[in-house]
Length: 289
Length: 271
Figure 1 (cartoon, rainbow over the protein chains, first blue to last red):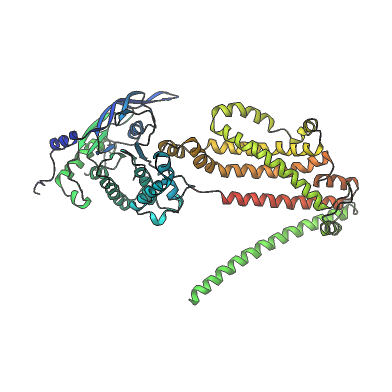
Figure 2: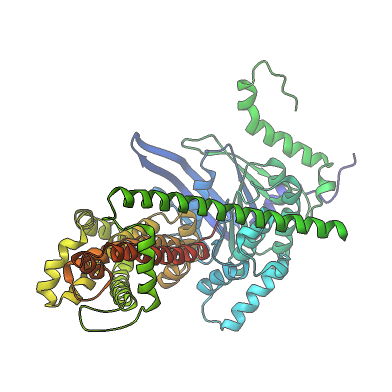
């Protein structure tokens, strides 16, 4: 296969990234929880600098502390050591500059689709009239194609639709940072694929200005969406194992990129980083990759 | 077209058969009860009135429910209404106290630690024990009865409300935190909607117990009311009236419970 001229070298990507202003700084962050058996260290000495408009995936085995690390950015978890700085300000709690999409959608079951988004907009965006708030909600419902379902309760929606509501809710408060905690983990492969495209569509509509950090354990998903992939070691006391740079040109087409040799290389490297553990446990079973 | 009509007919038939079936079981159970009642009446040589005597007295009572011939001679409707009035007053006041206290208890550890020991000690006390306190405090048997019902209505509502609030899932709390809900928004959009089914369960239990306690409370207080009517009929040695009152008390309690149950269904949700 002929080398694709659109594919950027690692150095070029790094250069491009460094042109953008800093969005998030994670400095020496350690998170530990007290347990009856003593202190449990979830993540240890993490340093990471994320630039504005980047899409970053945090990937690692379950229980490795990737969600915990993300919670320090959202302000839901306080680091025991170190600090997180978002847009130049130290994180001390949750704030409307960071929109969160939770793993299990977390819609309020007694509110309709419309109300779920409206209540978030109403609390996060001050100084605008009720009419403007309603038009923001309408616009975001339209973006995720849920206008016909706006008066339904969450229990009447499929998993994919619920997650679209959650994503619309996170985008509607117009945060500069979006935090997605295994957002598509519970969806089937087909729905997942279309949700990836929708997420990128929303990101593009906003001129790729939003910084997106996503926790995932799906390698294909991480490569398709991200600019950089942060691989964490296994917990406890997880650290950054490796940061993979994804130089695939945007807009990316799912069908096309899988055939690129660069895609295959990154996938191979990620698999090696993540899967070595399994091959030992699966001794005697032929592991083909 | 013909086929779908046939199917529709079949479904309708199934529903009708199901309902008729249930009604037949009801009739069967009732007849058993009436037969046992009749046999017990016969075996006491009519000292215990049988169903036939009772129903003729019952019919007399309910065919002229409202009349007032002085303090000791009032219609069954008057008695029932005055009992319902006391239960309503006591239940409403009790709930107004219990719901906010329950919300405080459920949402703060301080509130729980302050109130819970008191609640645990007072809850097992029969509400009738408060009757003399009420008499001294209010100098009126009527108000004192309402006071007993207030105490009765407190505990189930309080405990269920507190339980509801303390079990709000972390997910819902995270949403409120992540999107910066104000305290007012948290209470109205998260806490109350989540707790409402629990509150209604508490209210349903409260009203049920209040309706049981009112009969005993009115036996103590005298005057007018369905409980007093039972006691008065016993003194007048009219067991037919006692049986009729039991039937009426049961029916009213059933209706109260059903209406709260329908509220429960109305405000329950699945996530």
